[in-house]
Image (cartoon, rainbow, N blue to C red; front, side, top):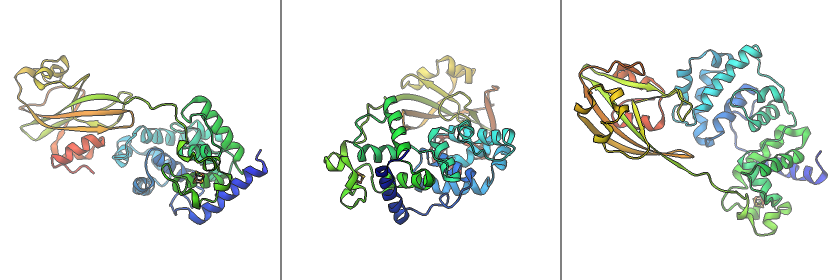
Length: 358
Ligand code: SF4
């Protein structure tokens, strides 16, 4: 239940929002499907980058039924370059679930929306509040920052206690009658006004209520417990070409980064390994029966940084007379390789080799 002070803060933020909000295509709709797509795209993507993807995605799949009926490869291809591909796979799986379980009609209940694959508490709250004005407060990175500063919350945002506390605080602050508008306002306020570095506090309508500002401690909030360690991985990719213009791709099926995407045949090693040593490994012999005799040409190295992993990739070219007989790989004409969804790393390599891979 919101107090008078909470409602005053909510009014300040809503008034600010109505004057300053960005005009975005997913803002002027109450269609839960469109809101859902935009929220999933924006989860780990900046608005300016996500904008074009959103437009392409809803143009190709204007309804949940059409998305459900699509091939996964096509969904991933549309997603190519956005990263965090589990988002696309989950969207696709959830669309099928809406079709089967809810007869193609997007569910209304918070718990039903939350049960969809890839939909967490934040996304479920965003969908039901924006589409149906249901009183569920959203808590994302922007909300953490705004609330931690206004209320000078010392609890780290990445701790279990902190997450619980911020959820309660956001819910108390929510103006139930204008839940959708309130949620949009807090998030936009965090994105444009109460920004991570050097916010313009002197021109902030919430500064009168902001404890961090009063204590000159704006840069201290939000408090974080500690950063997750970044893991290094070493990928050795083999661009295998046959004399008759064919090459091989492999579909990543394991529960790992880039699941469902295609790539060149890969050997992952625990550390960087010289090619002569690679050629003597069992993994190499599994790809090439006569591994030791082949001429393996070094092409290039690329470093690819993800949020919790850094990939050190080395690309080699191997020219052989006939493609290896191996079910793990998909043989294709070289000019067809660009049709398959690939990671941004492999895309960069293919591009450098003159492929057009949209
Ligand atoms: S005064 Fe500064 S820190 Fe406080 S809400 Fe406004 S912009 Fe954020």
